[in-house]
Image (cartoon, rainbow, N blue to C red; front, side):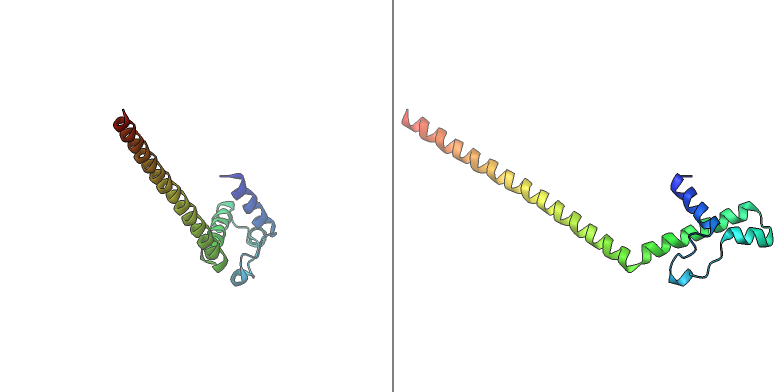
Length: 112
């Protein structure tokens, strides 16, 4: 497990991070459940994983997260279009340079 997940689970066990969202405000600390009911540690870890999954679902479904994703996607599209436009411009410039060279070569050949 990564350190981030371990830290999140420790916060949950200590009851520091009880509020996930307004919908889940009245969650009890899993550590309190262990003390009250003498539950196995494996069950507590399973509950923690469920809680973290709920948090992840809420984050992915929230409007703010969706707005952020939309902004990021639009910025990526703008950057891609700028890159494509630069490529097109470079190709046009190369064609123009080639045409000028050919015209100069043809003119110089005619002069000799």
